[in-house]
Length: 403
DNA sequence: AGGTATTCACATGAAACTATTCTCTGAGTTAGG
DNA sequence: TAACTCAGAGAATAGTTTCATGTGAATACCTGT
Image (cartoon, rainbow, N blue to C red):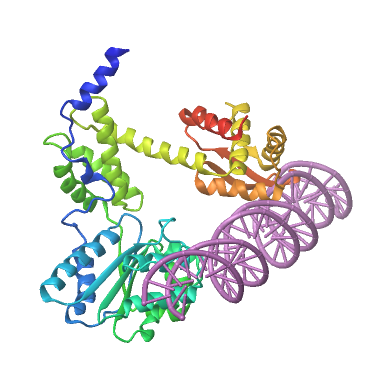
């Protein structure tokens, strides 16, 4: 035992293949952003008038996850702030991520968060929204300045809040006398603007910039660039990079995914005391990411979801090998038994049917509606959790449900 | 045999209900003036 | 006295139930050969 442990410690202390792992972490800001020159230029040219003390157009940026939206906007912001200091212009650019639940997912909280960013403070609760608005306005308008507010992932926020919030924000300017305010919205959802009040659409989308997904070649460039900083010489093969890029390109060109893949592959390699990442580690990393995602879902879903999933799992085990499908009725019957066993409220079949649909969306099962003729219509369900994970998933479910 | 009518076992929709979370309002509290 | 805090009332929301309607094809049933 002792021998094995000290072996682990040895390899941890021993020179690892990482030079600087943080380069691959998601919050790292690289100093150059390859293949986004055009977009960065666009953002910059839209925001540039601020240096002359003019209000800039509202800007709306969208593209899928991991296409460099946030990074590019923040890059421009930093550059602008630098220049504005030199030029002696009063400029404030505040960044707020609406998705971080604790920070902001209601109108009130977003405003409160903004006020805090500007140096004020409000009570966590209790004040009428109108008052928070006026406090905000007061804070902004106390001197002549130009303010740009970057709202990252606003699609997340607006799902929960009604559109009025955005409308109010866009017309804040009319309430301001000294200061001026512009908005930058960042969204993952390309269709976001479509389902929004047209008044908001036209004012928020004065300018729009689209970030297309990276293709495999571009991803390779990005990975190469980061690799040279993150890893020591010769620890990564060209083939490994290509493979990473290919994997991520398949997932709608998500650079974040590619970097995660590389980092985890690196960690796996390191853990085994090797100094060179090989292609098989990429495969391992890929399945580890998949695995973690599944376990995360299983762990964080509600008891009802878990009970339904558990029933599916049990039925799947029973039918092992026979390669047949599961049907809604069977799942529901077993589910209601499970509920009785653990003394949990039993939901209606209607709801369980929806839950099965939702589990399908999460990718844990594969469900299709089929007709069995005289024997009715139902969902044909197949578990799509990799078999090497089944035991672990079952363990989690049993523990969580108290079986 | 070939055609069509039934029928099953749920799917899918809409509306109503409910428990929880948010927002708002006015009263009470605090602290500074 | 202004600013803040808080509790409770009302509004919004998410999750669920209830009621109603829809659906595709295996099977039962007919029909004429």
